[in-house]
Length: 401
Image (cartoon, rainbow, N blue to C red; front, side):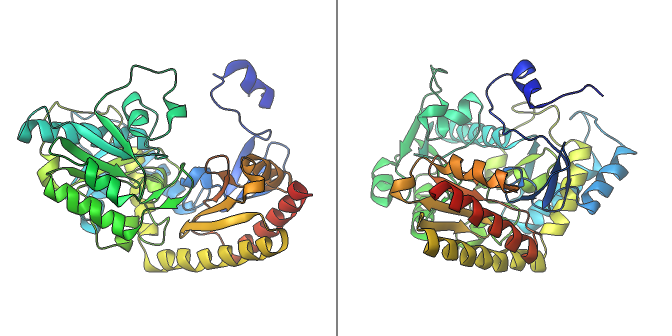
C-alpha cells in the first residue's frame, strides 16, 4: 500500500475540504481508531450518516452476501434489493412511489425537477416558482445549491437557476404573502441542519401544507438529515399530523453506504415518465441490499424509543456543562440531532470546540460557525455518552480558559 498521510491530501486532493489532522482507519460501533492506533468516541456519525455506528455486523453481512450475487445492472433492468427496499419505504410512509439515487443532492435534484415537471404538465410553464427558506441546505448541485438558502454556497457559480424565492424560516405571515398561483413547490427541512439545527414549528409545517393544497403546489420535505430514525421517529414528519407530497432521504438510509431516495405520492410521481429523469447508479443492488438491512434495524420500536431516551441524557449532560461554563444559549433539535447554540461571547467559535474535542479523543460537528452539533450513532450506549461528554467537558474547559 502506498504510504499516505494528512499531508498527502494537500498534495493530491482538490482543496475544497480542510480535513482535521487525523486519518481514521478503523471503526466499530461508536468508536474509531486513527492510523496511529488512537481511540476516539464518535459523536459526529459521518454527519448523521452512520446511524448504526461503524461496521455494524448485519450491514457488513448484507453487503458481503450481495457482493457475491450481483453488483450493477443499469436501469435497463430492475433488481430484487431495490424492489424490496422500495416496498419497505412505501409500506412505512405516506409515499406510493420511490426513485433511488446515490446522494441527498441527487434526491433533491429529482424532487425539484419533479415539482416543475408536474406543474408544467398540469398547469403550464408559468407555474415554476420554488419557495425555499433562508439558511436551508439542500445539496451541492447547481440547482440544489440555488434552492438552498445560503449565499456562501452560490458565490462564484452564477448565473444561477431562476424562479427560486427565499423566505424567513418559520415566518407564517411572510409565507402567506409569498405563495401564489405561480408557486410550484415549497421545500423545507423539518429541522434545518446546516443552518443551525432549527426546528420548523408545527404551526409552520401545517401552514405549508395548507398553502400547498390551496395553490396546487408540491410540498417537499428534505429529510436527508432528519430521516431514518434520527429524531426518534422513522421520519421527522411523523412527529406532526402533516404529511408531504414528496420526501427526500439519503445519509442514514444506507447506514454509511452511499444511497439516496425520493419518495412521492403517485399523483406527483406520474410526472416523471419514462426517459424524463434517471441515475446510472441509482437503485444499485449493493446499496439497496445494505439500505434494506439498515431499514429493518432502524424501523424498530426499541431503537426509535432508545433515541428519545438517549436525547434526554445528552441534554442533561449539556445542561450540567452549561451550568458550570455558561457557553450555550439554547439546546435544540430532536432526538439525536442535537444543536448547542453558543452564547454571544463565543459566536463564530464552534470550530474551536470541535478541534479541542478532537484533542480529547472525541469527534463532534458544527452546524454553522456558532452551533455545536452532535449526530451520533442511534445505537450509542449510555456508557459511551458518559465517556464522550466527559471528554467534551474537558474540551470546553480548554476553550473557555
